[in-house]
Length: 590
Image 1 (cartoon, rainbow, N blue to C red):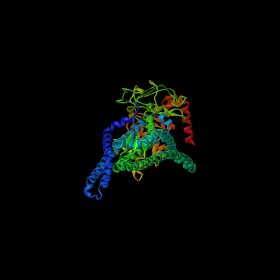
Image 2: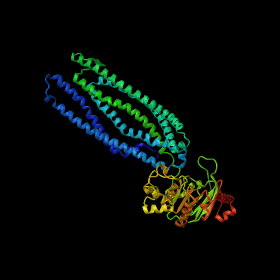
Image 3: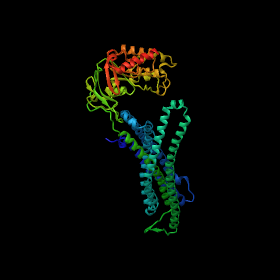
Image 4: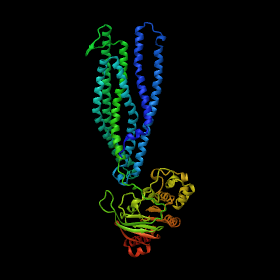
């Protein structure tokens, strides 16, 4: 089902109805003000000596109207703006959930900065239109209708003359909206570019500093910012021109109305009312003031019309971009009646598995077949680009694969519920990403129910407990964005602790001890042998020493399985493994 903002409106229809009813009451009550002004003029015209008693009823009515308007506007704004704020929150929530469900391919094809602009400026444009836009539309429709109805009751011909410029404004505004919508879309695309550049610059700030390219990046940023500024100015100029034309039409209309109306009052006072289209305009001074008051109440709807057109042009573009995001096809999803692993043993089987990345044209893995028995500890080695990470990404089902190729506990991977599958796997990725939070929360991220003793045990398992206690704030130490305050080895070990505390039946470590010294690596491996005995563990490594004591080792060469056997047998049958062992010995001798 296609995403539509109507669903969000219906969700908070109660608040909108309360606000709209309050707005209509305000609009109706507001039109009584010109009548009170006309009454005041009539009282003054008919009495040379006006006392407070003569105008007491008028004053009371003015006070009552003031309180009604105050209360009505408060209820109107509180209800409608609260609803629009909730819609904004709902849209962001749905977009965030959508972002979590989208595949890796989507993020390869779309820049993060662009996506962030959808979450910020585009959602804000939608919130603005659903809130203030709703208020202005109700005002423009009902206030105009009530005022025009009362104007006709006073004088139909004069009303038609006064309304002609406003009808011309509506027709012209519809033509302008298309231009403004196109300008806003251009502005948003340039805003995306600014977001992309900024996000990329902050991500690579250490590289920029290392190569002393701050000035170069500043010049590049200035160019992107200037282009963004130009697009903003183009839109702002168009908006200002439209506002000026509206004010000009309003000013001319009011000037002509006051001038012509005064002349009509003068002729009527002489007993010679002017006749237009067979209708005698017999209007008094008090009725003219009332009539001008009605026209004055139409000024706000006219101004609102211009703002509505501007907001709608922004809304139309922004909601289109949001719809496109929310309606993206979710490639990775569980099938209907997906199977759940209730007691995962950790048996893994690859059956003639081949894989090509969505944007690639060559096989990253080709005809891969092997079987890991429950509780086995298996290493994966091979040259860079041999397909080691692709292998575990497929096991986590980060990409869709062909059925009948990968099995866990003899159940086809494609038949498994994705959430349940990933719940049964603890993963330590190559990119040891840490959140900008304290170390305690980073470790317990995979198991929020863990207490401090569990967190300490996980840290000791990863041999990082002593390092953490050495910090002035211990486990409350904030790691900074992506763990910037920690060394590479510390980040790796905290990532290992985060995976271990999950206590999953399958654990995958993707080159997770490459940044630690040999002694620390040995401690971590000994802990794996001791603490994860009987649980399936896969360790991808660049050093042979990391996997040389495991049950079996899978050797990959150019995306194919060269060998899968015990370390001792590999020394006899695998040239790649033999070479890695020889080079490691040579390195240690040097």
